[in-house]
Figure 1 (cartoon, rainbow, N blue to C red):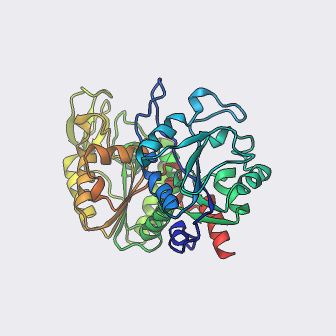
Figure 2 (figure 1 turned 135 degrees about the vertical axis):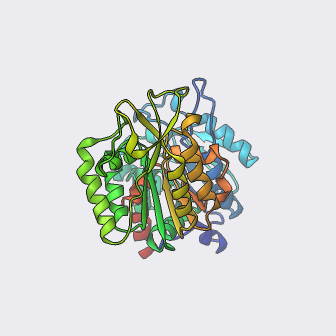
Figure 3 (figure 1 turned 45 degrees about the vertical axis):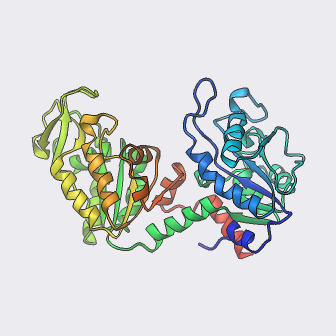
Length: 397
């Protein structure tokens, strides 16, 4: 995918003295007192801002936060806590600008944070009028917010149409490169791990991956539906019986080209869904009517780990069991350790996946950790993301 890269512009000196508008993803979780509880997204946005400052630009940064009502800025929707944290990370003042669409006073070497962009009327519907006003604020527009790349909004799409120059920031560029490496030109065998509670929410992803991957590892409630499709008992486990036909079709499509969906041969069951419920390992065919499958068994975990260690490329979305409960976390831990130990290029995304990576401390052993949830899933589905599309168009001239 050919897009203009902000890093190249800075190296060529084209940011010096210019007004740079960065769309970042600073949508961080906060507690009831408005304190930031996890700042990964802010830290991930710092390199782009520092790149702009080092390049001699006057820097404007904006992001959405939460789900504000357009035209109404409530205290809980303000980026004020983000401005404070950003200033700490950058080691310089970060002024918060409230009503900014009509004009922003910012000088080269200075960085300002423009208040929650979703408060502006027309942002979510990608209003051309709003986008043109935003584009007039800057000489260079930089999209560095992969987490919103699947949405065509005024700060993610419209402004890129009208800005003098539109390019990808380092975070967005890294996502483009990692996705291309994992899906467009993968080293084989390509193994995808897709787990979650429901097949219905990830059916299109499974169907898309079934055409391309060598092994499709399913986990969680999705695996239970595939076990049903394979004729195995699942007791009272979470599953979608009405999608057994679709699961069979995915399995058949994989088999037809010599690929496979590995079905669990053993599982960890409990009688209730609780952290303190006694865990029992059973052969897959021995699951009782009152059993609930909450993890893959050790035999299945070993087999999958071996496949992951022999992989050329790994795409990982979702834990394979209820890893929040220690008794049912061994399967996800085995998968995580195998991904970490594999020489394959690995790309991981999705909130629960990132939580598992953090729990087992394997951040440095994963090839690329995607910052986008919904955007990452849409890429796996084979969709072209609006933010990528408009940057590609602008690069083509």
